[in-house]
Length: 381
Image 1 (spheres, rainbow, N blue to C red):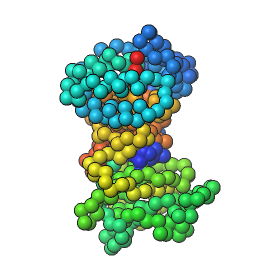
Image 2 (cartoon, rainbow, N blue to C red):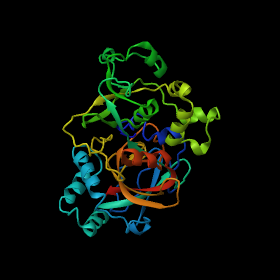
Image 3 (cartoon, rainbow, N blue to C red):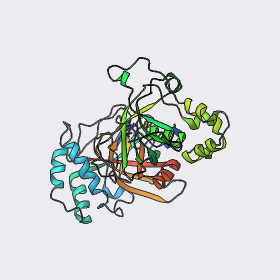
Image 4 (tube, rainbow, N blue to C red):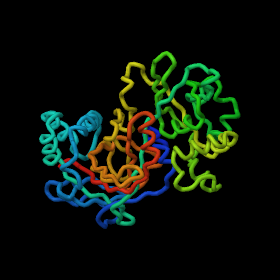
C-alpha cells in the first residue's frame, strides 16, 4: 500500500491498489454452488468455522491446484513467515498459531519440506463467487511508486504531496472538501511533505497508497498512507473513456500518462474528476529502502508473493494459491501468495490485486494487469 499504503495499502487500503485498480470495475469469482454466508463444508481435517457472504468454498486435493508442484515455494516462504508474525497476535477462529508454530521447524531453503508443511497443515479450498457460481474472477496489479523529488519546492519539483492538514488532526470536516475544493481552498498550505515533478505520477501514488521519493542527496523518503478526505473514488480512466478521449486498450496507467502529455492544459480537469484525495505520512528512516510497504495486515509486502483481497471473501493473512496470466499475455502465472493487503477497489469473491514490487518496471506490469484468474484459499486443518 494496495493499493500510501495499505493496499488503500493501506490505499490499497482506501483505494488501491494499482491504479490498475482504479481502471477496472469488473469482478468475478470461483467454485461450488453455495448459499449466501455458507461455511466451509468439512471433513474431519477441514475447518468448519469460516464463512463468507460473497464467496463459497469446496475442499480439493493438492493435485487440483494447477502448477502447485512447479512453484518454487522457497520464494513464498518469507512472505508466509511475515503473515505468521501478524497472525500469532490476532484472535481468530482458525488455528493460525499452531500452523505458524509448526513453521518454525521448517528450513526456508528446503522446498520439499515447505511443500510437505503446507500439505500437512492446510486444506485447500477452491473459491467461487456465491452469487454467480463463477470460478474465475478479475486479477489486477499494483505496485509501490518510486520517483525523484525534493523536500523543498524547486523549479523542477513543484507538485506537492501532502500530509493531513493540521486543522483536520482534531476532527475532520464532514463532508470533507473534494480534491478540487482542497486544491483551491488553501487548507493544504503548510502540510507539504515532499515535492515531485509530475502531477499524474503524484495522483498514481495516491491511488497506490504509498511510495518512495529519491531525494537529491541520495536519501530515500518513504511515504505511507495517512488518510483521505472520505470522498468516493472515481476512475480517471472511466472519465476519459466517457469522453472518448482514450480507447479501452489505452485505459491503463501508461495510456493515461500519454494522454496527459498530449493534453497538459486539461490535466487538472482530469485529476479533479476523482474527488478523493489521499494524505501521506513520512515513515521511519531506519527502515530498509528495499523493504516493501506495509499492507493492511501490518507487515511489509513481498514482491510477487503478496496480494490484496476482499475481506468479505477471505481472511487477511491467509495463504492463497493463484492461477492467472501475466499482463497482456497468455503466459501462465501460478504462485502461492499471501493475502496481506486490501483495498476499496478490490471487491468480489474471486478478486485479487497482485503486488508486483517497487519502481518503474513493477509499475509497467501493474498498470497493464487485468487478467482472468482462479484462487484457492488455504486454511489450517
